Length: 297
Image 1 (cartoon, rainbow, N blue to C red):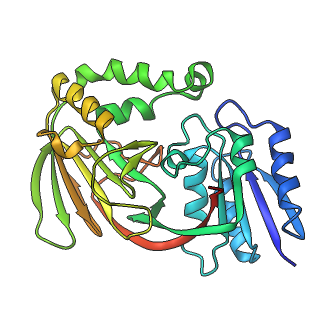
Image 2: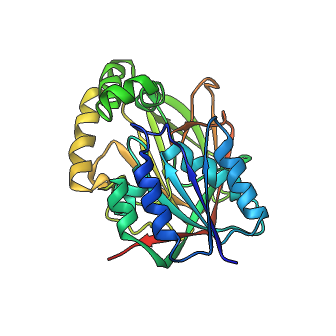
């Protein structure tokens, strides 16, 4: 019997409407003999449900939630010997990973265009004893994003992030980090922000002209080496043009794995929109580790 499980975070974003869940179930009922719906009620349940799906050899696991819910599911299945095919559907405020895949970010449309005959095996990252699907980051503007409350997001949506980021810009400063790439010797850098991404896109914004994608086993490291306001303004311009390599305050590196040490132990790491482990960090890429359903062309 072919089985599918739907994990729903009903509190994600502005709330997931039941008609969308029913829309997905109606579509899956045509492909699977049994479809089970599981709603999360507290933190950690998405990971628990995902592990159970692996244990039960469920063919496919569909997730409606934000970036945090997707991260939980990835951590639930990453170490299992059997991993279901994943259908990732938007339910949060930003849905940045789905934007990077050029998937629809309106839930009803995403369900309509979900192609149950086409999958792609994608990379995931391992950071110490945890896993991530998309990115690692730290810096003052990252702190602003992480500190945005659920109440602010419910009231203002993405604008809540923008307001908090603008408040934090004057507080930005340089941090000393030690970075070892692909087991080479550590080098010291002075940076204000650090990003490590499994793709060349942040949401639907192309970062550089280099060819890094979600299934090649590589990770893109973006280091901002200037904490001044003018550096942020130049950064915005280069993001709009998709050519960060033209910015003299940006250092771009590629890696299959890296180690990161930071003198300031209080720095907060952002992993797929959730608070991550404190440094030191050991990061590696698990190439083509998880199959995900694609959208119709």
